[in-house]
Image (tube, rainbow, N blue to C red; front, side):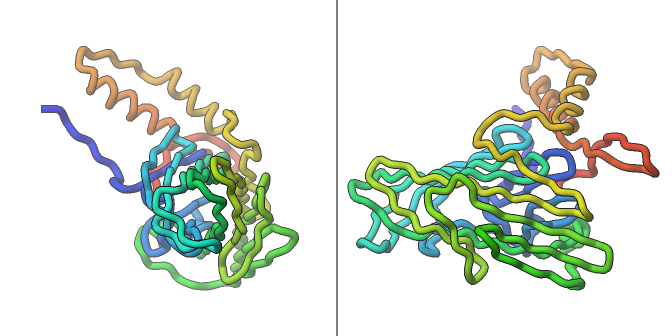
Length: 281
């Protein structure tokens, strides 16, 4: 009987070096669970939800593509819109996320309805800047000062506690509609003709003690990062295994790939080296 291996059921996890994202299968982030966007052991995004006119999307499918990017696809529920009511299943919403130090998100909405549709796309985002171990133990202590600014289409939230500084900068790029920010949400007024697609990218740049973790700014283009090069070198030099049992060979290859993806850069008294992290998150 074949062996079944299940790890983190219902979660999507992607990473690049010490930056990683853990979401529910629908791409949302629940601040009361060990989920979020983490950089340098700090949760810089603790809550994330995408909605249309405040209605949650209906998940069709989601999956990791590689260790550093994931794909989520949705449709709409029955949705009241400006020009009437939109039947369920009229829209295809595709979200792609890519971790390259920071996080890049592509959002595409295609209208399969026979009329023009008008609605608001809403992205609700919060940050608690909690330490990863506090997140895992669910004992999050509030301290320091948090400030949020919305200037020239850029949303910046920074947290300071003495010399400790973390932040997240969120900016929509290549957007067909200009974003607005109010009441904890980025909002886009979306108008889509039948058979057409609306698009925006959202860049999430993390800040940590003077270091800037910027994402790749180009949609769906392959990239090479320092963490990726270290992973590839690890895979090249790792022990090879051949077996007449295809499942054993696949399990081993996946384990090696996961170990390579979990390697992070460590600075020990001025000496830099790469080692496997204890796990994600």
